[in-house]
Every structure is written in structure tokens, then in C-alpha cells.
Image (cartoon, rainbow over the protein chains, first blue to last red):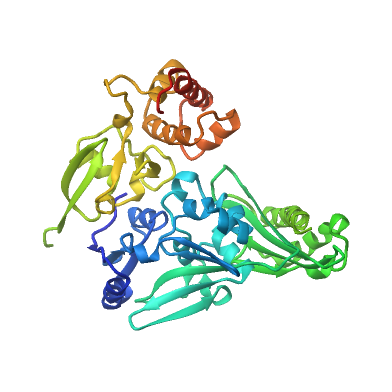
Length: 287
Length: 166
């Protein structure tokens, strides 16, 4: 349970980090919070030749709340994003999801951008980014590109980063008015991987009727799954909407797999229950 | 195979500046135990699940098995050894664990003490539910947790009654 050998780099600037990553190519790996990477190294599931520690890159630190969303730098720890009142005000789903990410001790060190790059299908922040239609900014030697959430997650534990690329920030866009969000999940123990989780967003029209209802799912698909459930509840008053019908729709569309923690059928059941609850809670906040 | 490159690490541990030369892959938990001789930090699962190795990094609890020693260069670390009172007697959280029988084999205890200390610094008068939640990331295989929860609440009392820092 010790990491294998690697060459350690601790660049002092983003340019230096990109130069090292370009040289290391496929053999390079970025270390930010390390809350996923170090276990992987300890268990020898990966053995990168070069580890690039970005913890000195203060230019990547911080959470910036803007008029139309929140930009989270690659060095911002989950705990820092969670505690940011301005960010929670602009994009409430951020804090709603972050409080479910592992335990507070892990959130003190783990970074939000790092968890996106790690692309764990049971990661809360992957679902948040997908549901909000956010994006990740990637830098490489000589250029940058912005990748939308829909293209960012490629498969389980696989994001679209190319060798030599560094994720420098993530963008979580704000939602329009009359919109509420909620995040619910069920795990065997508090802080464990969720057997199923649902992030929900509901937008009401001027009369308080449901205009749009969408949800994102974790632990039931290889990449974050976003479902538009509007058809089940469109035009219904928020207080009396048929959330059970939306839950039925969700159950029909998820295709979970079984593992030792839960059967596929149980996960499907949870997806329905949590969908109804999360949509109702989101609608309550939309008014 | 060539000799492994060593890196100079200098960090303040329990208020004392310490230095070591370590391979980059050495975990902070191992730097504390092997290089600095501070065996109060216990290593359980080595993948972040059990919480036994929890230390305070710049005052905040982190898993020392999920951090490289080289990454701690220039930072302050507090281990369970650093949570005594200035005269060397047990700190309030340690005292509470003794009073409430909050340990049996003691393996997990350093992680509970560091975690509870940081928690009480943020929330000096927790409810039972808050105390339970605060220690939910630490595993104990002996006690059944009841006396650990009692210890955390008792530590809050000691801190309040004696007007001391957790």
C-alpha cells in the first residue's frame, strides 16, 4: 500500500507545469488534492512515471462568483467551494452537492476540478456539472480549449483530457429565475459512495406551473446521465405536480448495473424514489 | 535500479520545525512515523477510508496517508502528540476520551482525537447529531462508537468549563 516510484515535479507556474506535462506525455499525471489519485497509487492501480504537483500554482486557486455563474479554479478544495456563500447564492446546487462529497476531512484536501477530471460515475460534482451544462477549461503548451460537460465525460473514470493537458478551471453556470435545485443520494454509510444519487432542477413559469424538470444521476450509468423529465409534469402546478409520473419516467430510462453494494433493480428503484423527492424539493425552492 | 532521488522537506510539526530527506513517494503518514519518529499517527487502511491517520494540516483535518510528504513541505502539521496541554498533560479531547472510555484497543483513537479537535474548534457546542456526523469519516472496530460520541460531547464540556482551546 505504498505508491510506486515516480519522478516528482513541483512547478511554480502554470507555464512550467504545462512544459513538464508536454514532455511527460502519456507518462505524466497531475496531483492536486490527491484524494482519488493517492489511493490509486497506494493500491498500485496506476504507475505514472512523472507526477506533477500543482499545489504551488496559486494562479489556479480560488472561487470566482460572476453574474452568470461560478468559476472554480483547479486548486480550490471542495471545502472552500462549499463554504463560499457567494458561490452558493449564485449556484445553490454547488453546495447542495458538495455536502455529499465523501467526508469533511476528504473535502478539506480534495479539489472540485480534480473530481471532475477523475470522472467517477458516482461523483457528485460530475452530476452537478452535467446537469447545469457547465464546462471545463483545459490548458496545454501553446493553447487552451473549453469542453462542455456533455463532451467532457467519456466513460467510467475517463474524461477527455489529452496527454499534456491540465484542467485549469470549471465553469458552473447560474440558472434562470423561478428555478430551484436539490441534490439527494442514498449510501450505505454517510460519506460512502452513493448507491444512487439525483440532482434535480425545476423551472416554473409565471403562473407557478412546471415549465421544465430535469435530473442528473450518479452511480447508475458509466457517465453522468441527464434526463429531461418535463413531459411527465409539464404545466402542472408545482405544489400538486405528479412527481411520481416523473419518477416512473426516470425508472424506465436508467440502466443501472449491479455490484456488491446494490442490485441493478434496487438502484432503479432508488432512482425513482429519489427523483420524486428531489424534483419536489427543487420545485419548492423555485417558487 | 538506480538509487531513489531524495527531496528535502521542511515542515512545522507540533510547533517544532522539522526537516527530512525523503523519496517523493513517501506518504506524509510514513514521514511522520518513520522519519520523524512520531508514531502517535496510526496507519490503518492506507487508502483514506478508516481515518486513523488523520492529522491537522494548517489546522484542518486531512488524511496523512492520502498526501505525499513532499506536498507538506512548508506547511504546519499537528499530530495527536501535539494536542496535549502546554504542561504536557492530556488536552481536553484526550482527557474526555479517557473519562468516557472512548477507546478500547486505541488504534483508531489518534484519528478520532485530531478530527474531534478540529470539529470542536469550529463548533464548540455541538448537538449529539452534529458530533455523530463529525466523526462519521472515522472507523472504530471495538467500541460501537457510543462512548466516542460521549467523549466528543464531554470534550466540549471540558472546553467550555475550563475556558481552554480544544
